[in-house]
Image 1: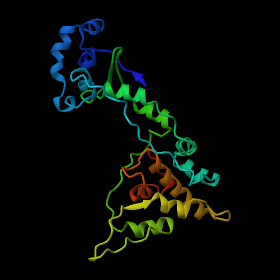
Image 2: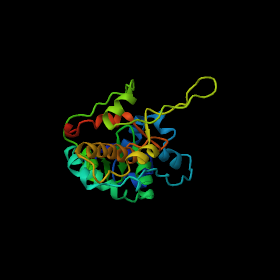
Image 3: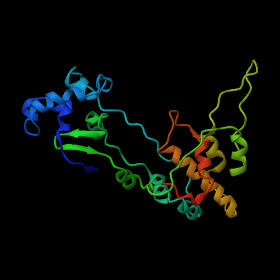
Image 4: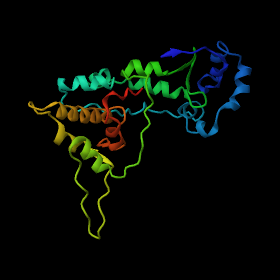
Length: 248
Protein backbone atom coordinates (compact mmCIF):
# COMPACT_ATOMS: atom_id res chain seq x y z
CA UNK A 1 0.00 0.00 0.00
CA UNK A 2 1.11 3.54 -0.69
CA UNK A 3 0.91 6.27 1.93
CA UNK A 4 -0.68 9.39 0.51
CA UNK A 5 0.19 12.90 1.63
CA UNK A 6 -0.67 13.68 5.24
CA UNK A 7 -3.14 16.47 5.86
CA UNK A 8 -5.62 17.60 8.48
CA UNK A 9 -8.28 15.08 7.51
CA UNK A 10 -6.53 12.75 9.92
CA UNK A 11 -8.20 14.75 12.71
CA UNK A 12 -11.58 13.42 11.68
CA UNK A 13 -10.82 9.94 12.87
CA UNK A 14 -12.37 9.46 16.28
CA UNK A 15 -9.52 7.37 17.63
CA UNK A 16 -7.41 10.51 17.83
CA UNK A 17 -9.88 12.84 19.51
CA UNK A 18 -7.86 12.72 22.72
CA UNK A 19 -5.90 15.96 22.84
CA UNK A 20 -2.72 14.43 24.22
CA UNK A 21 -2.48 12.20 21.16
CA UNK A 22 -3.80 14.55 18.51
CA UNK A 23 -1.80 17.68 19.30
CA UNK A 24 1.36 15.98 18.06
CA UNK A 25 -0.12 15.63 14.59
CA UNK A 26 -2.69 18.39 14.01
CA UNK A 27 -4.12 21.34 15.91
CA UNK A 28 -6.84 20.14 18.26
CA UNK A 29 -9.09 23.13 17.48
CA UNK A 30 -8.95 22.16 13.83
CA UNK A 31 -10.07 18.66 14.76
CA UNK A 32 -13.08 19.99 16.65
CA UNK A 33 -14.11 22.19 13.74
CA UNK A 34 -13.84 19.29 11.31
CA UNK A 35 -15.80 16.70 13.27
CA UNK A 36 -19.00 17.87 11.61
CA UNK A 37 -17.67 16.41 8.37
CA UNK A 38 -18.34 12.92 9.73
CA UNK A 39 -21.42 11.39 8.16
CA UNK A 40 -23.76 10.27 10.95
CA UNK A 41 -25.28 7.61 8.73
CA UNK A 42 -21.87 5.93 8.56
CA UNK A 43 -20.68 6.89 12.00
CA UNK A 44 -23.52 5.56 14.14
CA UNK A 45 -22.50 1.94 13.44
CA UNK A 46 -18.82 2.54 12.78
CA UNK A 47 -16.56 0.29 14.84
CA UNK A 48 -14.37 3.24 15.80
CA UNK A 49 -17.38 5.16 17.12
CA UNK A 50 -18.71 2.16 19.05
CA UNK A 51 -15.34 1.60 20.71
CA UNK A 52 -14.40 5.21 21.45
CA UNK A 53 -17.81 6.69 22.33
CA UNK A 54 -19.85 3.69 23.45
CA UNK A 55 -16.85 1.95 25.04
CA UNK A 56 -17.83 -1.35 23.47
CA UNK A 57 -15.27 -4.14 23.34
CA UNK A 58 -15.50 -5.55 19.86
CA UNK A 59 -13.95 -8.81 18.76
CA UNK A 60 -11.78 -9.15 15.64
CA UNK A 61 -13.73 -9.54 12.44
CA UNK A 62 -14.54 -12.96 11.06
CA UNK A 63 -12.77 -13.27 7.73
CA UNK A 64 -14.57 -15.09 4.93
CA UNK A 65 -12.63 -16.36 1.96
CA UNK A 66 -12.89 -19.16 -0.55
CA UNK A 67 -9.93 -21.08 -1.85
CA UNK A 68 -9.65 -23.01 -5.07
CA UNK A 69 -10.77 -26.57 -4.44
CA UNK A 70 -8.50 -29.53 -5.00
CA UNK A 71 -11.45 -31.25 -6.68
CA UNK A 72 -10.72 -29.30 -9.87
CA UNK A 73 -7.12 -30.08 -10.77
CA UNK A 74 -5.06 -27.78 -12.97
CA UNK A 75 -3.91 -29.26 -16.26
CA UNK A 76 -0.81 -27.83 -17.96
CA UNK A 77 -2.64 -28.09 -21.27
CA UNK A 78 -4.82 -25.18 -20.10
CA UNK A 79 -1.82 -22.85 -19.85
CA UNK A 80 -1.66 -21.43 -23.43
CA UNK A 81 -5.37 -20.59 -23.38
CA UNK A 82 -5.37 -19.06 -19.91
CA UNK A 83 -2.26 -17.11 -20.86
CA UNK A 84 -4.23 -15.47 -23.67
CA UNK A 85 -6.62 -14.01 -21.10
CA UNK A 86 -3.68 -12.60 -19.06
CA UNK A 87 -5.10 -14.40 -16.02
CA UNK A 88 -2.36 -17.02 -15.82
CA UNK A 89 -0.47 -15.42 -12.87
CA UNK A 90 -3.72 -15.09 -10.92
CA UNK A 91 -4.85 -18.63 -11.72
CA UNK A 92 -1.46 -20.04 -10.70
CA UNK A 93 -1.57 -18.02 -7.48
CA UNK A 94 -4.99 -19.17 -6.29
CA UNK A 95 -4.73 -22.70 -7.66
CA UNK A 96 -1.96 -23.43 -5.17
CA UNK A 97 -3.61 -22.01 -2.05
CA UNK A 98 -5.04 -18.75 -0.80
CA UNK A 99 -2.66 -16.79 1.46
CA UNK A 100 -3.18 -16.76 5.21
CA UNK A 101 -5.09 -13.69 6.35
CA UNK A 102 -4.03 -11.68 9.40
CA UNK A 103 -7.38 -11.19 11.13
CA UNK A 104 -6.03 -8.73 13.71
CA UNK A 105 -4.41 -6.51 11.08
CA UNK A 106 -7.49 -6.53 8.86
CA UNK A 107 -9.73 -5.69 11.83
CA UNK A 108 -7.43 -2.83 12.89
CA UNK A 109 -7.47 -1.35 9.40
CA UNK A 110 -11.25 -1.72 9.18
CA UNK A 111 -11.60 0.20 12.44
CA UNK A 112 -9.65 3.04 10.87
CA UNK A 113 -11.46 3.18 7.53
CA UNK A 114 -13.61 6.22 6.80
CA UNK A 115 -16.16 5.99 3.96
CA UNK A 116 -16.20 9.79 3.69
CA UNK A 117 -12.65 9.84 2.31
CA UNK A 118 -12.29 6.22 1.18
CA UNK A 119 -9.07 5.92 3.14
CA UNK A 120 -7.60 4.62 6.38
CA UNK A 121 -6.98 7.35 8.97
CA UNK A 122 -3.80 6.57 10.87
CA UNK A 123 -1.59 8.52 13.25
CA UNK A 124 0.97 8.97 10.49
CA UNK A 125 -1.58 10.22 7.98
CA UNK A 126 -3.95 8.69 5.47
CA UNK A 127 -3.42 5.50 3.56
CA UNK A 128 -5.54 3.86 0.92
CA UNK A 129 -5.45 0.87 -1.40
CA UNK A 130 -4.58 1.70 -4.99
CA UNK A 131 -5.40 -0.23 -8.11
CA UNK A 132 -1.71 -0.99 -8.48
CA UNK A 133 -1.73 -2.57 -5.01
CA UNK A 134 -4.57 -4.88 -5.99
CA UNK A 135 -2.81 -5.86 -9.19
CA UNK A 136 0.43 -6.59 -7.33
CA UNK A 137 -1.20 -8.62 -4.57
CA UNK A 138 -3.57 -10.80 -6.59
CA UNK A 139 -1.82 -10.68 -9.99
CA UNK A 140 -4.80 -9.37 -11.93
CA UNK A 141 -4.27 -7.20 -15.03
CA UNK A 142 -5.41 -3.59 -14.67
CA UNK A 143 -4.73 -2.38 -18.20
CA UNK A 144 -7.02 -3.40 -21.02
CA UNK A 145 -10.63 -3.23 -22.12
CA UNK A 146 -13.25 -2.71 -19.40
CA UNK A 147 -15.27 -5.80 -18.62
CA UNK A 148 -18.94 -4.86 -18.99
CA UNK A 149 -21.15 -7.89 -18.47
CA UNK A 150 -24.83 -8.18 -19.26
CA UNK A 151 -26.97 -9.66 -16.53
CA UNK A 152 -29.73 -10.69 -18.94
CA UNK A 153 -30.19 -14.43 -18.41
CA UNK A 154 -32.72 -15.19 -21.12
CA UNK A 155 -31.81 -18.43 -22.89
CA UNK A 156 -28.74 -18.98 -20.73
CA UNK A 157 -29.00 -22.78 -20.76
CA UNK A 158 -28.88 -22.94 -24.56
CA UNK A 159 -25.95 -20.51 -24.61
CA UNK A 160 -24.08 -22.58 -22.03
CA UNK A 161 -24.67 -25.77 -24.01
CA UNK A 162 -23.34 -24.06 -27.14
CA UNK A 163 -20.23 -22.89 -25.28
CA UNK A 164 -19.25 -25.89 -23.13
CA UNK A 165 -21.47 -28.68 -24.46
CA UNK A 166 -23.86 -29.07 -21.52
CA UNK A 167 -25.82 -27.23 -18.86
CA UNK A 168 -27.25 -28.14 -15.44
CA UNK A 169 -30.52 -30.09 -15.50
CA UNK A 170 -33.81 -28.25 -15.38
CA UNK A 171 -35.21 -27.77 -11.86
CA UNK A 172 -37.72 -30.30 -10.64
CA UNK A 173 -41.40 -29.44 -10.68
CA UNK A 174 -42.86 -29.30 -7.18
CA UNK A 175 -46.40 -30.17 -6.17
CA UNK A 176 -48.64 -27.47 -7.52
CA UNK A 177 -46.71 -27.04 -10.76
CA UNK A 178 -43.99 -24.75 -9.41
CA UNK A 179 -40.33 -25.34 -10.18
CA UNK A 180 -37.53 -25.26 -7.63
CA UNK A 181 -35.71 -21.94 -7.63
CA UNK A 182 -32.19 -22.30 -8.98
CA UNK A 183 -29.45 -19.80 -9.72
CA UNK A 184 -28.61 -18.71 -13.25
CA UNK A 185 -25.45 -20.75 -13.58
CA UNK A 186 -24.09 -23.98 -12.17
CA UNK A 187 -23.21 -25.34 -8.78
CA UNK A 188 -19.59 -26.12 -8.00
CA UNK A 189 -20.65 -29.71 -7.43
CA UNK A 190 -22.05 -29.96 -10.95
CA UNK A 191 -18.97 -28.32 -12.47
CA UNK A 192 -16.60 -30.67 -10.62
CA UNK A 193 -18.67 -33.72 -11.54
CA UNK A 194 -18.45 -32.93 -15.25
CA UNK A 195 -15.18 -31.03 -15.73
CA UNK A 196 -12.80 -32.08 -12.94
CA UNK A 197 -10.34 -33.89 -15.21
CA UNK A 198 -9.66 -33.22 -18.86
CA UNK A 199 -9.45 -36.49 -20.86
CA UNK A 200 -5.93 -37.55 -21.81
CA UNK A 201 -6.87 -37.91 -25.49
CA UNK A 202 -8.76 -34.60 -25.67
CA UNK A 203 -8.38 -32.48 -28.80
CA UNK A 204 -7.75 -28.73 -28.76
CA UNK A 205 -11.44 -27.85 -28.75
CA UNK A 206 -12.13 -30.02 -25.71
CA UNK A 207 -9.06 -28.67 -23.88
CA UNK A 208 -10.27 -25.12 -24.53
CA UNK A 209 -13.65 -26.01 -23.06
CA UNK A 210 -12.10 -27.48 -19.92
CA UNK A 211 -9.74 -24.49 -19.59
CA UNK A 212 -12.69 -22.11 -19.87
CA UNK A 213 -14.69 -23.97 -17.24
CA UNK A 214 -11.66 -24.18 -14.96
CA UNK A 215 -11.20 -20.39 -15.04
CA UNK A 216 -14.92 -19.91 -14.44
CA UNK A 217 -14.78 -22.22 -11.45
CA UNK A 218 -11.64 -20.70 -9.91
CA UNK A 219 -12.74 -17.08 -10.35
CA UNK A 220 -15.96 -17.74 -8.48
CA UNK A 221 -14.33 -19.90 -5.84
CA UNK A 222 -12.00 -17.06 -4.92
CA UNK A 223 -12.51 -13.36 -5.65
CA UNK A 224 -16.17 -13.35 -6.72
CA UNK A 225 -17.67 -15.94 -4.38
CA UNK A 226 -21.39 -15.42 -3.79
CA UNK A 227 -23.11 -15.56 -0.41
CA UNK A 228 -23.79 -19.29 -0.68
CA UNK A 229 -20.27 -20.24 -1.73
CA UNK A 230 -21.82 -22.98 -3.86
CA UNK A 231 -22.60 -21.51 -7.27
CA UNK A 232 -20.86 -19.99 -10.29
CA UNK A 233 -23.12 -17.52 -12.15
CA UNK A 234 -23.46 -17.87 -15.90
CA UNK A 235 -22.43 -14.29 -16.75
CA UNK A 236 -18.76 -14.98 -15.95
CA UNK A 237 -18.60 -18.03 -18.18
CA UNK A 238 -20.13 -15.92 -20.94
CA UNK A 239 -17.38 -13.31 -20.39
CA UNK A 240 -14.79 -16.06 -20.99
CA UNK A 241 -16.26 -17.11 -24.33
CA UNK A 242 -13.32 -15.43 -26.13
CA UNK A 243 -9.85 -16.01 -24.67
CA UNK A 244 -8.00 -13.02 -26.13
CA UNK A 245 -10.37 -10.21 -25.13
CA UNK A 246 -7.61 -8.78 -22.91
CA UNK A 247 -9.86 -7.31 -20.25
CA UNK A 248 -8.32 -5.13 -17.55
